[in-house]
Amino acid sequence: MRNSSKGFTFVEIIIVLVIISILGAITVPSLKSYSEKCRFRSAVVDTVLDLQMAKLASVKINNYVVIQVEERGYLIFADNGAGSGIEGDWVRQVGEKVLAKTVLSDGISITSNFSNDQTRFSGKLGMKAGRIYLENEAGAKAEVVLSFNGRIRTQ
Image (cartoon, rainbow, N blue to C red):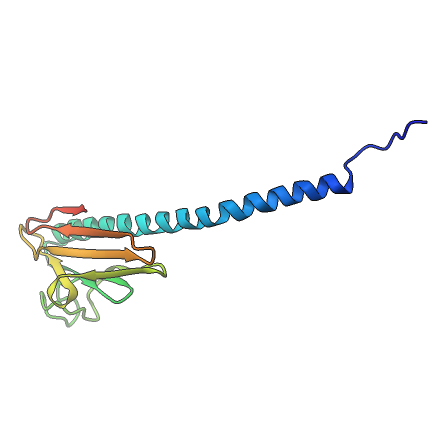
């Protein structure tokens, strides 16, 4: 008589599980590397977009907008003397509006070559030119370049 049971044997299931685990062990490190690259690229693009926004905001309010690079990110605020502040003093006062406060992901560092890690857009032509440097733990680097005429680009 013929055995009519259908299905997989225990050995076949074990072989399939071993193959799946080997493929998983191979692909997980590359996926982690890919996600780190994407996170870094996203941080660079977000920084450029925030600087573009700051430039446009300075024109809109026709006043200073300060970009202050901090240890883990950056702060962008209107330096218009709102409240009891002093216009153009490079210091955020209580009444001055925060336009963006960005904290970068773990593993991404930010520095700049601006004096006191600050620059600003004036709402008119001209600004303090310089560079913002981003780097991740894997050694990927990017520079966001701000020219004196307000052009923003990456290198």
